[in-house]
Each structure stands twice: as C-alpha cells, then as structure tokens.
Amino acid sequence: MVKFLLKIAADLQNLTNLQPQGGCDDPSFSYLFKLKCENCGEVSPRETCVSLGDTVPLPRGKGTTNLIQKCKLCLRDGTVTVIPGRGKPLTQEESEAENYAPLMLFDCRGYEPIDYVFGGGWKVESLEGTKFEGVDLSGGDFAEYDEEGEYVVKISNLRSTFDVVK
Image (tube, rainbow, N blue to C red; front, side, top):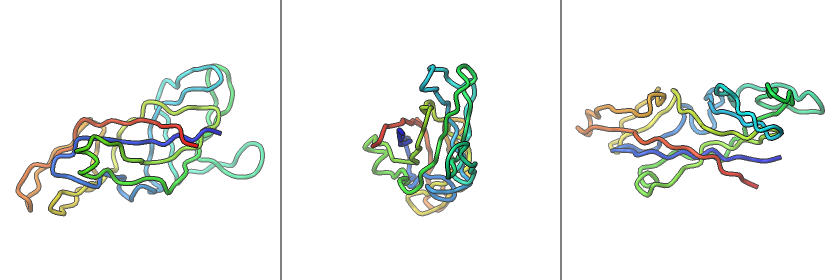
C-alpha cells in the first residue's frame, strides 16, 4: 500500500486560494492523470479519471475504492482510493515562494499515478476578494480582469508532482 500526495504549484498574479470548485475535498471534482502499472511498467495510454464521489466495491474482501482498473499489458487489477482531508488551497504566498500546495492523497495498489492533467472546475479569488468560479485550467493558464481591484489577474506556469507519503 503506497500513498501518493498530489501537490500543485502555479504563478498566481493578484490571486490567491486556488482550489477545486467545491473545496479541496469536493466529491464531484475529477482528477485526471496517467497510471503506471507497478507490475510491468506499462503506462496508461490515456488519462484516468478518479473522483471522490465515485465508489465501487472491492472485488475481494470488504470495502470500496474509487477506481479499479486492469492493466492492458499484464492484465492485473489495480486500485486507486481517494483519501480526503489533506488538501489546502494554493495561496499567493506559496506561489511567490514557489512552493507546492497539497491537493489530494491517493492510496494506490498496483499503480503509480503520473502526469497530472489540469482541467476545469477550479475557483480562485483576487487579492481584493473577487471570486472567480468555474475556472478552466485545461489550456494551461487563466487570465481575467478584476473590475473591483482594477487590475489583471492571471494563473500561469501550472505544475504538479506526486510525493510518496507514509
């Protein structure tokens, strides 16, 4: 049982508190990333979608998980379980310091998550408090004008990493 902590970083211009639309533990937020089979090393050709709100029963034993996927090469099953409670918004201060903010923890068995893909469903607020919701980061950046603060707001240089956690 290996746990992977997804952490994100970005350059935030006049913005703070970047996080999924419903907060870091939003059950409807979809995480997209490629999976690498720990048995044979095969990397999934397409991104896999995992959501806290989607659960399936484990094939053996009791309990549920958020994803069961069979490796196309070695045909072994692997699971990914989303573990809420570890995520925090990316703040302006962390962005300026070029720090990564924890987003979500995944318990992976048989797979290793790699190559996180930013998509839609984000929210962020300007330094003046203007809220921007439904932000789509699939294009790699976001730019808007904050009428209240009378300045441009921007998200760019999106980055992510998966850290192994005990």
